[in-house]
Image 1: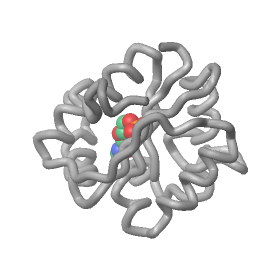
Image 2: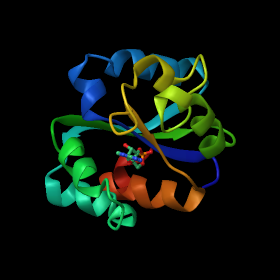
Image 3: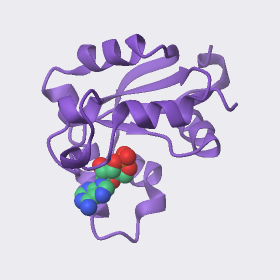
Image 4: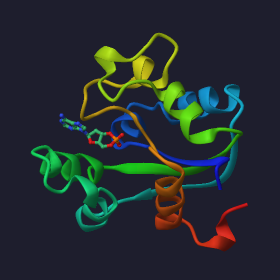
Length: 138
Ligand code: CMP
């Protein structure tokens, strides 16, 4: 599955009305949407999704933020998807994100950074399966 990645449009971007703008940038960069849903993560579910970060000092803040409002979960397809998508979203900290990236345009801080992007093919598959059954992945 090296041609797929997973993204979430986070509660800050949803609340700021940026879902459409972000999807437009994703489309313009040549990614194909193969699964998508708008949903809400409970604190428990947000903690499960980010379990890898549970020892980090920002974990509590991250869980509170990610369960604050609706998110849009999306699986994307493109050659070299994981790497190309991380380039498109830019650095985790928007202060370091390059011009033309999603986080440069829409993120407000290192915590409230508008979008998530998988960091490996393995995690892309795990994260996509967290939200979508196989029947929902096209
Ligand atoms: P994401 O790419 O979704 O993966 C982990 C998330 O943790 C990250 O985006 C940020 O939202 C959040 N995060 C990472 N570093 C920090 C930090 N120093 N302070 C607060 N939140 C952070």
